[in-house]
Length: 212
Image 1 (tube, helix red, strand yellow):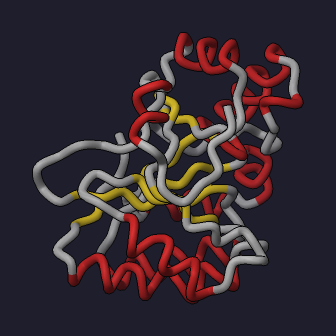
Image 2 (spheres, rainbow, N blue to C red; image 1 turned 90 degrees about the vertical axis):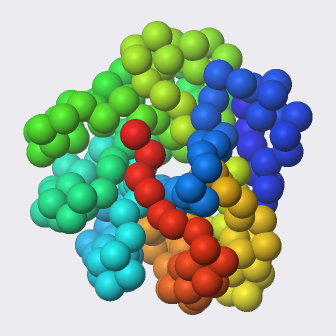
């Protein structure tokens, strides 16, 4: 499976119904998510923005980055955000043997359990790429596989800052799961688009929540 488009089609959601694409609700809730951290400067900047806006979000963290930057990961938890598993080495499931992929997921799990008092059973596959056999094995471990409804494309250097913002504000609906990246590669687009997107979405009456 590989899902790389701005707005996820409803037929894809039906076809891959075992994956979580959005979270229907009656309260205009939406869900900001951040992939690939924790990275000291970038993740800390995101946390500062979220704190100033009184917003909670969900961070899908790479195990190796948790190991390198435990203090940043701890801050994510201390400030009331949710975290999820993004493998230890940001593996592409299509290019990885299934047993190795699952072991890498478990390595990430081991790393965050050193700092997290509660087990997070949220998983997002790097690149949105997993084989059906991997997806099944992950769900058998008790994980929810969290995909997305809206992809900002902040990580893509060919996408302008303005287009990144437009991707989010034009496609977000009630229940949308939105993907940004707290990574060095995404930093330029992220720093432009995130604060502006939050303001526009707030003005539209949306409220932000964590995925659980």
